Length: 182
Ligand SMILES: Cc1cn([C@H]2C[C@H](O)[C@@H](COP(=O)(O)OP(=O)(O)O[C@H]3O[C@@H](C)C(=O)[C@@H](O)[C@H]3O)O2)c(=O)[nH]c1=O
Image (tube, rainbow, N blue to C red; front, side, top):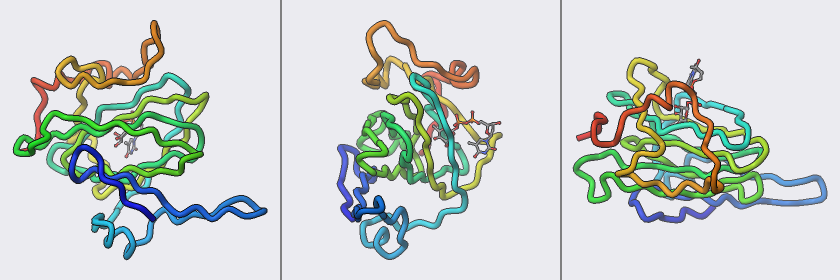
């Protein structure tokens, strides 16, 4: 299990050991002691699974007073996954990291509390699964537009294509007007 730092401290790529054999493969997706040793010392209270078609973009989501840390991965297909630092006191406030997660690279991304999160589906279909450190609280949920010009996220969207987003996500706030963390 490797814990690979990203350009934003606290956002970590996790590369599990994948044990392939004649039957297929085996990997650990969570192991308390190993993740703690890797700096991810948290307790999870909810697991989620979403399925999306190619071109779908979900995000950028966060919960304001009940922030969720998320350990995210892809079990079918591939996505471009993004975490945005919304901690005003952070030296990387307003910066983002993007990582391709796929069924082939088996990578996970640790998105700590204090970040907005979203992903764009690169494959025909993607099954996205993740663990959360706080329960879903719809009244606490906030959304920043994926294409906010100040964030300037370099989504790998093909020329002349526009990501497909939910009505809720299309109505997201700008980064400038969004409520953020201290
Ligand atoms: C997120 C969530 C949604 N739902 C319901 C509400 C709604 O009817 C339906 C779809 O919800 P949404 O449109 O918010 O789903 P979705 O756009 O997939 O929301 C997710 O996006 C990614 C990027 C994240 O980071 C997650 O934390 C979460 O916000 O599922 C739950 O019951 N529990 C949950 O934890």
